[in-house]
Length: 63
Image 1 (cartoon, rainbow, N blue to C red):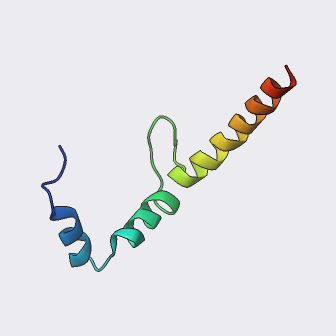
Image 2 (image 1 turned 45 degrees about the vertical axis):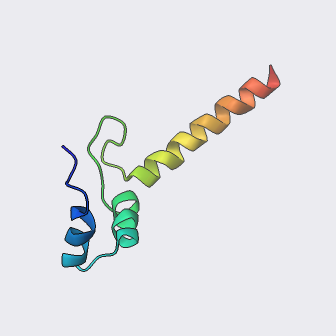
């Protein structure tokens, strides 16, 4: 369930974090245990996927 409107910024301020700081932490420092991330950060997962995507695009361009 989504948090009530306006509660997330209040919670972040109470922890001494800005939303930008929290987003950076969430995407680049905090590991995730989901099916795709498998213990990596979302940023690391994105970079790995970008390499795979670039390879597929290069192969498609040759055909």
